[in-house]
Each structure stands twice: as structure tokens, then as C-alpha cells.
Length: 99
Image (cartoon, rainbow, N blue to C red; front, side, top):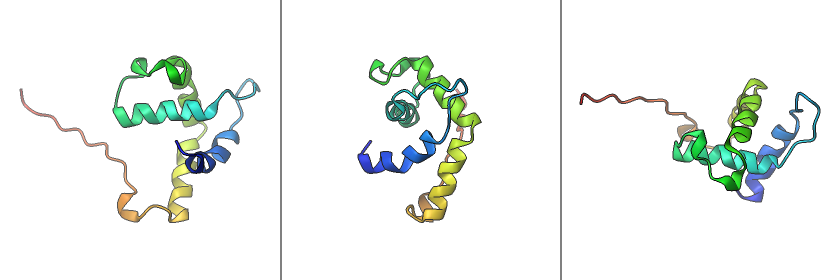
């Protein structure tokens, strides 16, 4: 992730406080771990160790989801106009084929 990309995500992520009040760990690395999972489609257990423990990355992703982080990021992207409308989609297609 480039510094410019991180600068966009940083204020969203740092605005969410941990439920126990602990200072955040390396949130950039956690985000990069999540993006690796999203890009590859791999199961969480296959997350490379360079991103930290897979379970820690998953639990942080879950906390961010419950806190509404992803909706806030998508809203900001829509309002910024940085991404053309044709590219703003999430594909959840499932193709089933007869064996």
C-alpha cells in the first residue's frame, strides 16, 4: 500500500477506538492483511505471517465491520468522485456449475 493510499484510510481507521481502550497496533499492516485476503480470496488461515497472526487480523477486521468502517469508506469514495462510477461495484456473483 502506498503512503497516499494509507493517508486516505488512516483517518477512518484511527477514528475507531478499541473496545478495551488499548492503543492500536500497526493498523496499516492489519489493513494490508485484509486487502491481501480480499485480493487472493484465500481463507483467513492462509494469511502470510508477515501480516501478523491471522486470527488477530480477522478479529480486527470484524471489529471494523461492526463499527461501520467499510460503509464510511465507501461513502467517502462515492462523495469524493475519485473513482469513476463504472468502477464502483462489488461483485458477489456465485457461479454454480453442474459436475
